[in-house]
Image 1 (cartoon, rainbow, N blue to C red):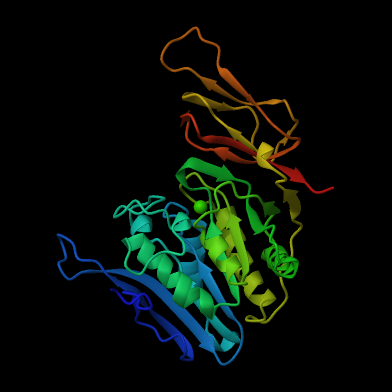
Image 2: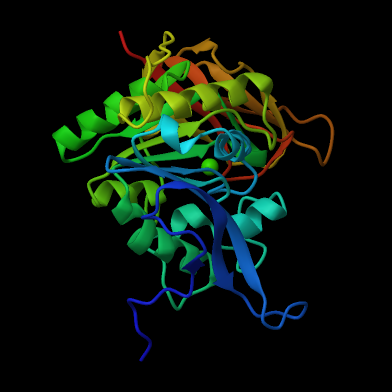
Length: 333
Ligand code: CA
């Protein structure tokens, strides 16, 4: 029987040593082009004495770029003497996926945000998840996981917290989300939360913040700036970085139930009838899907299920049944 305490991943950095260390989470991966090869996941640890630990991640999905840009950058620009405690930076969590610009891993098709708690004797993606679950998350007080929409979704730039059974923990998460100071702050309803990193961190009692900062498979100057400022704000909020939090007005949004999601039931050419940030009314046509197999057919129309603003949308021009076409969130009054 395999030792379930053991992880095949070895960190080349020592998480308990002061200073700045750049290294790797090294995961052996034997394959055709490297018989004794390994996946080398970049990691930076910055530590200065006793204090809180922040675990900062991007690239949980490999086609989301604000997190990796801002975190590779932070790794070059965070001197140990500017902090109190410890910052662990993993710019691209699902590194194999990140290297090929895909949401999921090219090795095992693993979706990092659906395989938690992972397995030490599982697939490559499960082994990475297991390492976070049993070795990195337990070190952390504050966990920030930076997402964007990837190639298939686009979002208003928002930071998010979840409704949690432990209201004291939820309040900690909301305070950290507010410190991130994205233009929008969302109490997020997850439609598919089994196996999520978010849930793993929250179940361990961590203060957890995630984001959706844009999408479409690239990053903009604006959304990268939001990520950079938000990361530093969260570190200040945690007491790790000194200085004032750079507050910006943030619109609070709620997602009360599944009526926030508009799911397509037809394939074809997508016409969104509202843009991100636009006000929409319940019953208003929010998307039309044009048949592409022949002319002369009227498009299938989809209506908003709730009053609110368009907070997310399907990004590619073509769509298929089951795609989330639109996400409507409700501004807090
Ligand atoms: Ca994502």
